[in-house]
Image 1: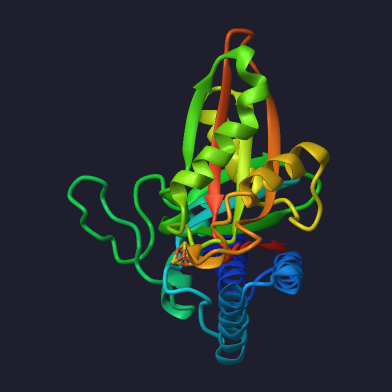
Image 2: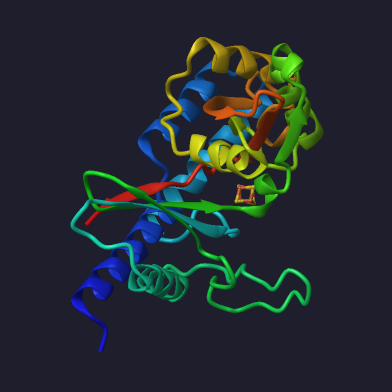
Length: 272
Ligand code: SF4
């Protein structure tokens, strides 16, 4: 018999996944509307209209916005009174299994070599669960589609190449072209180690995208000069936003990770 704690966590994860999959956050919708208002190409404007129609249908019918419901990435904050326990992980996985049926989610998790599908979006290391101390007990879900994830890159740059970071990030967007379903959101992790730079880049995708600092805006402008546009059909906006997270790194290193997110920038936080 599952404990009340197990049930609470599993239900919160299931609800967060449902809400993330069926309705985009307000900041993402707002930035899409601004890009639409600024667009002059009729083809690009048509793509935005398709996106808005897609969002409306998903909400009305309570179905996922995209057929690729992603792999589930979870960020959990634990207040001091909630223990870090195996039960927490098991409950989070149960929430993913339940959401696979109830939302429903496409079963996306496979063994990397045999390609055997688990059928429930769980597997070794999946869902990816990141746990941090915090003041409140919260679950944040970030479903990550493969189309954009596959276009992500990491580069161990030279410490002397700091000025080349914007160029590298723009090159990643240029190489990605239409494949990550633009207009994209670009998460950039600068510093840390090889692994933590990637984690920073993904965490950057949790940040609100309706504001950017000067460095983020500089990179975003550079990407938008590419003219790739919505769905790669040309247009003013290739990147809706660039978000950067930084971490201290070795004096001899400069890791830079770029995690690409599609226009379908799904995320949701539930407080327990
Ligand atoms: S990249 Fe995003 S919008 Fe495109 S198919 Fe994947 S999840 Fe859907």
